[in-house]
Image 1 (cartoon, rainbow, N blue to C red):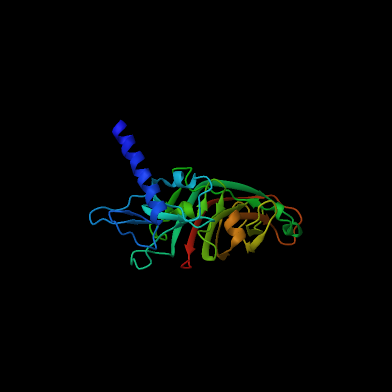
Image 2 (cartoon, rainbow, N blue to C red):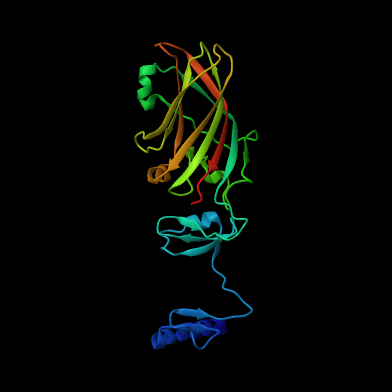
Length: 270
């Protein structure tokens, strides 16, 4: 052990002396390149960087811009660009996919929506945030074998905060949302809103969908939504919100929504 510490001490002394003498350090070479502060030569060995799990990588406090680690969960290198961790992907790799899709089913989540008078639909606090969770029940399922390289379903939807999560600023995604609706009385309509706000609502999409059946009968809703993910979307994620109302009616009962499915397709090659 004493020999080890002496050797380690000698190595650092060598680094300091070499650095002061010519501002370059060579390992495996006596003529380090003038453009490199450290020049490593070997024909039989490589450079081994720190290897961390995703949780360990994301737990690094105040990572420096340019910090490089190997993520053992993804099996790829990640670089911190000063704002976020970015996966290093070989652009000429034919197996690398920057676009793709994931499908998720939440079979156990169910909400009873109270009737909202249609003029009150302009107040988005009357909408209900649908807190989906695609991993908390055996009946839930995900398909992510066609996702962009190095990503999974959890990169597209956050089960903890119950929000859609963009991969990068500038992404364009196609959202396919489907669920069942059972009104207690009459048919009415469902209002869908996508909210990227934090403490107040920022609605980037809204649509009303008439229900074909009412009075205890099931209607199936399926809606395609094209979203462009910019800075606020990246910071807050996006909440899926629903409200129930009836045309030209100021009173009503409730409706049940359940059996949620979500397909998110990343269209852009960012």
